[in-house]
Image (cartoon, rainbow, N blue to C red; front, top):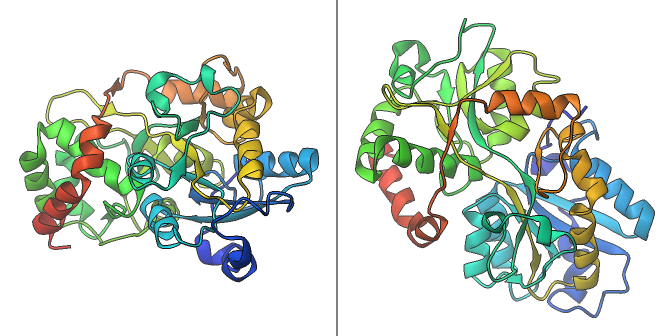
Length: 352
């Protein structure tokens, strides 16, 4: 069972791509090369080689002979990297969480391609213009240390308690997809930007500080260095197999119901990708029924295809985790258009 993704620096060979791909950057003339480069948000690759990506990439290489070159980081980090390389494209496939996949589309980083099987993906989980499609569904959430806390916190307000001082942390909004999700959920739960920022200003007294990637937080919670942190259901459920002290929970505001929202891993074909045809093949493969059937069993996530309904033990447990939680639909168009405004408001409120 997969544990968790390695940070960028630990992915042997993944960061030495620039020199090797420079000659073919920005064109599709290298389509005959047996490689495809993926820039991805963390969460789907296993530290021990047992994640969904590990399984799917190995199966893909065995079937096609195409080797996957993999680079990972926070969602915003991956989009910014692709943007810097726009005149000399290195990536073929980009996978991020919302709203960064929408941001990638609006910045012209993606080309239209509807992978085989995308007709079985709900309309809200893919772009109307065909520039991206969800490959693994997921939900935003928080984690807590089950050993030190008898029960999960119930509300946002509980996190203001002094016992969380320097033992709470969330990843950086505007940089990490899950960090940005903290803003989105807070604005929903508290009824708007101003009320959310007022709360996050108070929470800052307990916050350890910024983290560019959510991947760094779960091990700290499991060890008890932190009592609570942000995350997402797929990532944290998979981590809990090797980190037994992790518990997943969803904050409510005041006397309201616990809430969450869908935070899928969405994939798009990079514009002017050096290996466009290989990128298309990989996207088709990730959305194939076989690969989707393994999303829960191997990756601890939710299939993107609505015609794939797994019944494995992980699927059953995942359904229980979100039971009784109100799922809302963010306005992704508004968030894409106003993300900088929201992040700037957060920086002003927290002094970050």
